[in-house]
Length: 234
Length: 99
Image 1 (tube, rainbow over the protein chains, first blue to last red):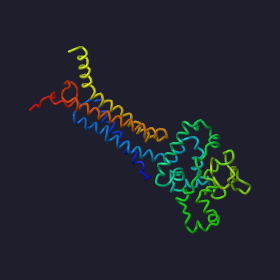
Image 2 (cartoon, rainbow over the protein chains, first blue to last red):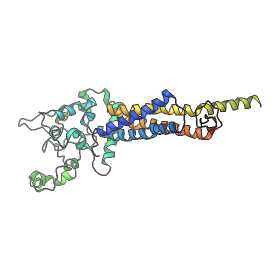
Image 3 (cartoon, chains in turn cyan, red):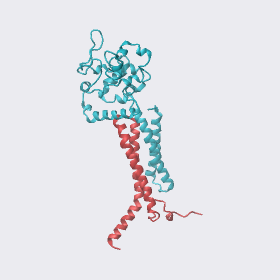
Image 4 (cartoon, chains in turn blue, cyan):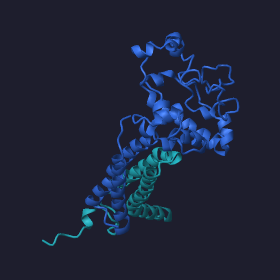
């Protein structure tokens, strides 16, 4: 989706104000319903509200890609806090500090790509809203949400490969990449694995969902799922 | 003319007199609600507000526009035969030009 910027919101608000002024003039001044009034009402009820609806829809959709929007549910507090922590070294934090991701780091990494990716991502977001308000997530404590809320499906390596090409010589020259190329392509191994590039949100991993304790060597311990190289959630 | 017919004609006249402006005014109130919902979703883009504005807000706007169209249609249908105090395009009740 193209970045429309804040001006779209201003256009929506301006057209809403103009429409409201026309409507209030008709309601308060009560002019006769002659042709001039009807044309004014056509502007106030048809043209300007249509502009408001169109621009507010685009602006609203864009607002849903912002990190603050994703972090507005308390179950995402830790993810939001870690991603925006200037000292954190998790994948999420490092990517968030990358200007390319800007204010949309959650969306850029978690969006589905492809022809219907945008719509599919938004449908997934609707599911999140449903779970939050009607599925019991809203009443969860942070500890409960860390333990019980998981990514809906295994993280797709294609999302990483949108930026990190796997065809360049530099990538192919890494022995681990060569050895696991087929599994990476089939999503059998996640790029964001503790043995590889580390979890994106390491604090949420581990058997109790309360973080992975570093081993004596300083590396993250494998998860208790039996798949140490994957980030797959139930 | 029977009592029933007289009642019916009176009711019809009342409807013709008031329905057009009432519908137009109703359309305005409904549209104001829809515009407020959409404006709030821009100012405070919280999940529920954005979803509500994109669904219910737009439905409210469409209902308002349909009310407006209906009022125009009713105005056309009633023609010039309505009472002079009813606002409308009835040319026969307009004040003649000073010239």
